[in-house]
Structures are given as C-alpha cells and as structure tokens.
Image 1: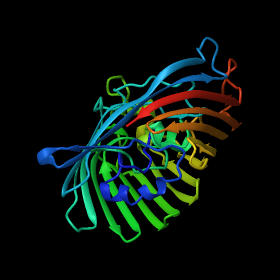
Image 2: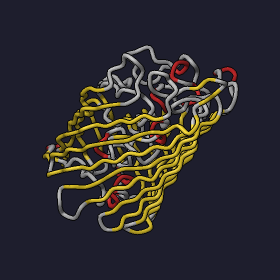
Image 3: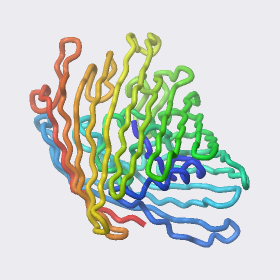
Image 4: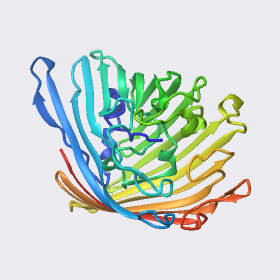
Length: 387
C-alpha cells in the first residue's frame, strides 16, 4: 500500500535520470548527495535525512488519543551511479507518509515494515557503456504511482487513496530501456513483499519537453498469491488472509501528467485497480477501486517558502475494503505550506476526507464516537534535516 515517487530510490539509473529535470518546481528540494572517493569502487554518493512530526486527528473513537509525536523517516543511502557496475544501498526506517482518512492515528515508524528489516533498498545495476538500457536486481521500489513513501519527496506529508492501495518495496529484477524521449521500465518480483515471485510492473515515461512529461504504469499479479503468504511487517503475524487477498491478487492501471510553468508544478493522476472473483482466496465477488487526484506545488520565487497540496476523489466497488471501507466514495484535500533553508525544512500539513457514501450491506461506517461520522481532519507539524 506504499509506493515510491519517480526518483533514484526506486528506478533504474537511466529511467531516474530521464525524470530528474521535472523536479525543479517541487515544493521541497530533496537530499543533496555528498560525493565520496570510494577508491577501487569509484565515485560514491551519500545522502539521506531524518524528520519528525507532531499530529492531531479529529473524530477518532472514544478512548483513542488524538494527538502525539512520531519520527517520520530516518534513512541513509549510499550509491554508485557511474560506470558499468552500479549499486544502491538504503538503510533505515520509514513511515512518514500518512494517508488522509484511512488509518486513524499515524502509525509508529519502524525498521520492521518489510521482511528485510532495516534494508529499505539494496540492488545492483548493470549499465553497459554507450548502451540505452540498464538491468537491476535486488531490493527496489515499486513503479506504481506518483507519490512516495518517503514524505519529503511529496507535495505534502499527507497522501491520497491512490498511494494507499499501491504496492511498495519489491525484491526482483528490473530492466530499463531509453529511446529518445521515451523510457520503458519493467520489474518482475515479489509484489507486496510476499516473497512470492509472480508480480509484474511496468512504467513508460514520455518527456515531451522540459516542462511536460506523461507517464503510464501497470502492476498485476500473474498467478495466485495464497492466503498463508506473509506480507509486510514479517516480524508480526501479517498474512495475505488478514491483510486483504484482493490487494495482492489484483490488476492496476494508472498514469500521471506533469506540467511545469515557472515556479508552478501541476500533476493530475488517475488510477484503477481490480481484483476478479476467486473463491479459493475468499474473493466471492469482483472488487475495484478508482482514484483520481490533482497535485500541485508553488515556490515563491527565491524565498525559502513554498506551498504544496492536492485534491482527490476515490470510489470503491465490491466487497473489498480498499481504502476507508467497502463501497466507499469520498473526496479529500491536503495543503502544506513549507519552509526550507538549505538542508533544513519545516512544514505544516492539513488535510481532510469527506465520505460521500459509507454504507455497505446495510452497515454504516465512518469516524467519531458513533463510528458513522463522514468527515475526518488531520494536521501535522513536521521538521527535518536532509543531506
């Protein structure tokens, strides 16, 4: 349910390089790598960051604390991005991206979010000299969607329904090919951190010019991922049966368009995910989720201030509780004024989700002490250090 934004942490080197030009108008500048002489390994780059936040959430059940403080992310990345043999190693914990309206109180950041523990990413890349393709193998990020699980890469710390239904880190093999303005990347691995190797992903990016870029992605299960397979948090009793078999046994198609004009960046995204009937998995009726959002950010000239945010619409069909609940329909928003001076940043995030429909099979669900309220608000104050 977590995905990575198009960045070096998740793509092959060639694919990532083709998209870096689109980062100029973003509300926040990400980590700036420190160059290191790696001796026989060649030139290396070290980057990372740490951030934390305080939060308030409205309309929680009685007896649930509605405020607190958390560490968001604490990550360190070492990369070699030159030569024919390259690698990426990223170690630490993450949990700073917060889906609006889906999870109540933000969860605690942990190094046990994945089966690899503190190893968030670790893969090698073969990049033949003067050739338009690369091949990577190891632990890497999903190709799905625009938003990142590392919140400082996003317009807001708060994330959408689109992000919430996506797959996250994968162990697998990835190939990337660039032909002029088009880059195509394919990844085969164990979607949803199941260690069941039957998940295929693809991303095609077309750079129209320096201000316009279009991206289409696919992710789908090529076989059945059984109910006893483990998914995420392998240190806990988390199985496909408990998590929701339709997540791991689904087909997803989506795309986004990035438009930059001066200090303004606007990105509309649409995504559809579908799981067919499979009685063996307990999916007795087909189920699907539609998500649509418009992201935006604006930098105020050369000042340290910027403004990011998004609006969204989500609609779930069938029995699956993809986001808030079965057959949910909702609209949401987030707004995030940001201050950043070199490696330091501070950001205020405010967002809300309103349920247009919250009834399934005669049962009404929602927020608050009654469990049926239609609106939930979340606010956070976030600060961090990037390097």
